[in-house]
Amino acid sequence: MTLTYLGFHLVFVLPPLVLLVRAAPTLPPARRRVALTGLVGITLLALVYTTPWDNFLIQEGVWWYGDGTVVARLGSAPLEEYLFFVLQPVLSGLFLYTMGFSPTFEERDTRYLPRLIGTVGFLALSAAGLFLLLRPAPTGYYLGAILLWACPLLALQWGVGGGYLLRTRGEWPVAVAVPTLYLWFADRVAIELGVWTISTTHTLGVDLLGLPLEEAVFFLVTNLLVVQGLVLFEWVMSRWDRLDLDAGSRPVDGSADAVDATGPSPASPVANGGSAGSGESDEPATATHDHPTTVERGR
Image 1: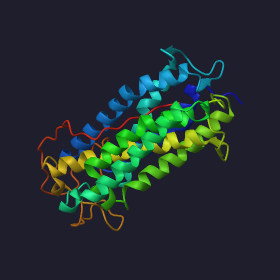
Image 2: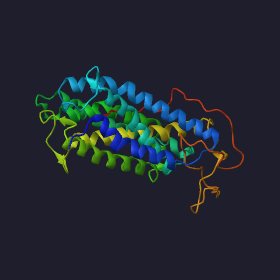
Image 3: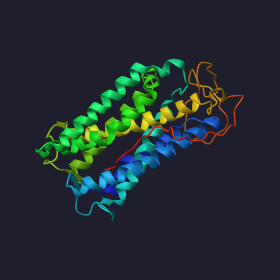
Image 4: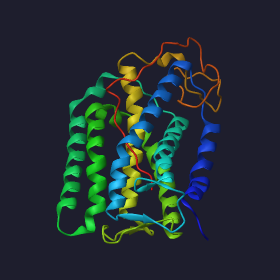
């Protein structure tokens, strides 16, 4: 069976996107604007930050594409690669909003210890990535490039909102795990069918059910960046009183009309229905320079 990169998108990326758009819950207008702003911002950052990194690793021979599997190239990367830079954050973001989360700010979110531990931990992983890149043996090159590229931004996210991320650890990790597992499966199939090939020279040779360890780490950290970036953006808006969480409520008992006074309704940047509750606020929400950074790379 022959699969092209464009065919990969048609088979593995677009169908779940369509399903998530259809399943997306309706948001009050104020929160819908904030959610859309966050998702657009995350996607643009993914495209801008990932493009030079991705092109450099292709030039270094870390991975390559099968004959006839790409339509055209812009620089060293296929056009389909840039499309993936856009589609993956949208896919993971829509799953997050479909699951729902509460961005409510609480005073304990500013606790110093979780922010310090998260920041130091991811900076240590960044240092490990630098070590793998600089050591004479090339086998750790790809893993080192991933860690040095992604972990400083993860450290920044935890430095900003580590207390909130720890407090809501029962919500957002599921939105990381499910898209990650799905993309592991899709990546494994694409490698098996020769859409792209990962260099054995630049990898450690450790596989997870046929998926190179480096690929598994890549999809894990990119989904972490997307999901944490989106929840932190709304959390910052809530902290700065730019997000009216009283404009809607979370459905309970399976009813879209039921009101749960304990929290807001799940967010969706694409839902275009009416209000989820009374007392909606039309106060516009604007992005700030404190937008948590996140990035992404396609294959």
